[in-house]
Length: 301
Picture 1 (cartoon, rainbow, N blue to C red):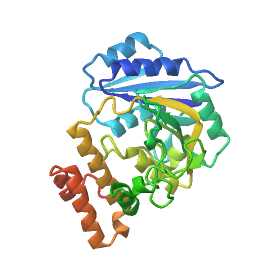
Picture 2 (tube, one colour):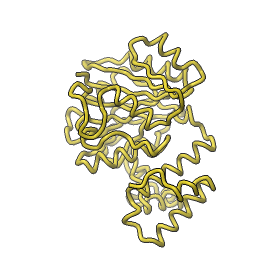
Picture 3 (cartoon, one colour):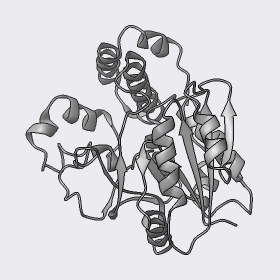
Picture 4 (tube, rainbow, N blue to C red):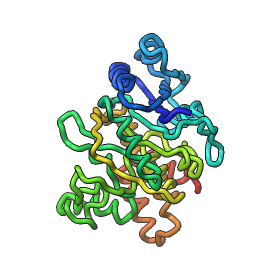
């Protein structure tokens, strides 16, 4: 049994993926690791580069861009995680979702394993992610986007009062970025999940396409009785949006993900007038294309 199974879903980020894999392969520490790259039909020779330069990496080539959660699930299944109550005994003790636009310092993977080994109550953990300009990637420690938390964030109250525990919940800006912290979710760019947590919570929800699936997974892991933790003693470098950029497709999928997450976890406890206001706000942000998702949801849970 390996200590860590890493899944990297790639779409047209060949050079960044190469650098990411170089840093992963160069990792130090007393642990065993298996790496799976799932290429979502890249047209930049990413798959050929992996096959040529990293023969020890398990490469899966999809014929289509199947999205981030489905791509990760394909990799997770290759590692032996098939779903809730269906995990191979030989599956790694931890699964790691890792973006191809990250760089991993030599001892980072070992330190994250050690951290989770010391805290069996933690089902999901993530490190401190630093962007190219040296600033904190705010998504690496998050509160769930409940209707109220989202209102505080998008109304501007979070920016006005970033140190408020009430208004700053979305990105947890009230807390020191170098403080170990229990959070609602970490980001899928580096999301380490305990094997037993996957056994209870299952795999990623494929109703999402490229956003929101990490929030949903963390939500279900917490429902299964585990904690989610931000561990800033480990630092990862993150380019961010290397594949998606700020394309209209990416913007649409972000708001579609927020709609799916809201409907899946909060609709039943939201009174109808507030529900209508939420739908109107999402439609305004996501554009007319979101109307089809509102009328015919891809997730009805």
